[in-house]
Image 1 (cartoon, rainbow, N blue to C red):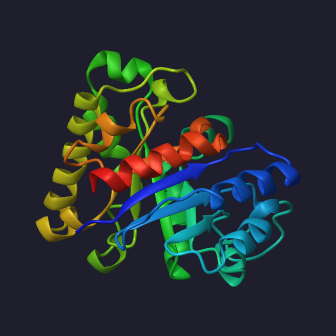
Image 2 (image 1 turned 90 degrees about the horizontal axis):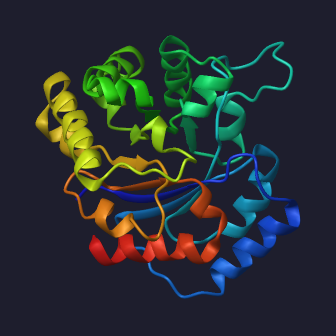
Length: 256
């Protein structure tokens, strides 16, 4: 059975006291994660130690970084390398989020280097891909996303690719209140899985978790997660509200 994942992406939000309050409220509430389910919190790097302490000894709950540098060390002021994250127990790193592609000009080639850096320290890249509105309107979203995967992931060996989590996030649905329909999400996820099968094997394609990101919330999570090829979500704004995020975890647990 594939992993199912509810991954919170806090982006550049919350104060130290708000982080404490949110996680304290989380653990005062009853919820369940099955053996094949995970809750991941991608937090601003300054809060990693704080969140890791809160998650210590919690079953299937992990802290993640939101980015890393492609080099292992060096004169890169302000950057954090994958080995540094690994050394403090961070084993998941989000890569290629559309905001980093747009605001920091991250390219497919650069992301391929970052994927390599993360895998080199035996950690898990949560690799984001997705199309802007003009590509969706032109009907070329499948080839656009396939190119992202070819350029950034498909150089990996079979042993490496199975360590990757892929998150499809239609850019036109991020922070806009718009959401891909369940049919649109399932269509893209099915395409991604078929590309994985074509480039690797059916067994590998069926193993890799595919998450949906793009204004996923408690109102649409059930319909999205019920799709055969959607294995959870990369949750943005809704993850900042603990009641909403708990609802999403409970929806995941109820479906899978």
